[in-house]
Amino acid sequence: QLQLQESGPGLVKPSETLSLTCTVSGGSITSDTYYWGWIRQPPGKGLEWIGNMSYSGSTYYNPSLKSRITISADTSKNQFSLKLSSVTAADTAVYYCARGLYGRPPGSWGQGTLVTVSS
Amino acid sequence: EILLTQSPATLSLSPGERATLSCGATQSVSSNYLAWYQQKPGLAPRLLIYDTSIRATGIPDRFTGSGSGTDFTLTISRLEPEDFAVYFCHLYAGSLTFGPGTTVDIK
View 1 (cartoon, rainbow over the protein chains, first blue to last red):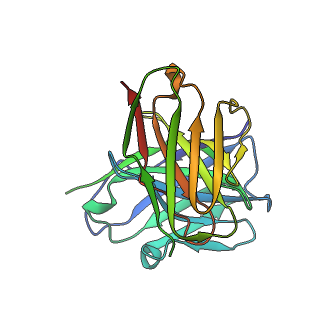
View 2: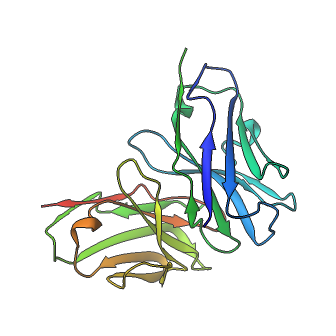
């Protein structure tokens, strides 16, 4: 059974870089059948697609965040990660990692982790 | 960039009633890559419907998706107590956007 688990600091200072890791169990991130993505949700608000990657190296980044995002994989640990630079309070959100089959929306999600940007 | 709207923002109904949720796109969604998610407080979204009308694995048949072009609908035929939640539509092609959500709460 596939499981995804987000981890990382719950508090980040403004202007610093937010770094999160998604650890995958019950499935391999080296499968090219799937993409691996990050989605966020500010408290009490809607969902925003951040970006996604495939093992083959292709990535998609939300154009509104593109200049600040890096999504990468560590196959030795079966993990993928998100880095979001120059954060502000507007980046405070629950961050979810997720997996989807190509051509389909993400069907498997982590439980989410709240990241607060504050000094 | 295609944007999604949802109506109504809140739907107040009783268990056993029928719920009709709407999702509108600012441009025609030619690929029908339209999905619906259910989200309960403190939990991740749960995929209900993809490709406009295909139920995801394990989703009961009281959930039905329909529509085409710019207008899409999620219908819950008879609300069960566990169906009271927030529902998001999602375009998973192109701009990868989500609608703002419809809250279905107990009347």
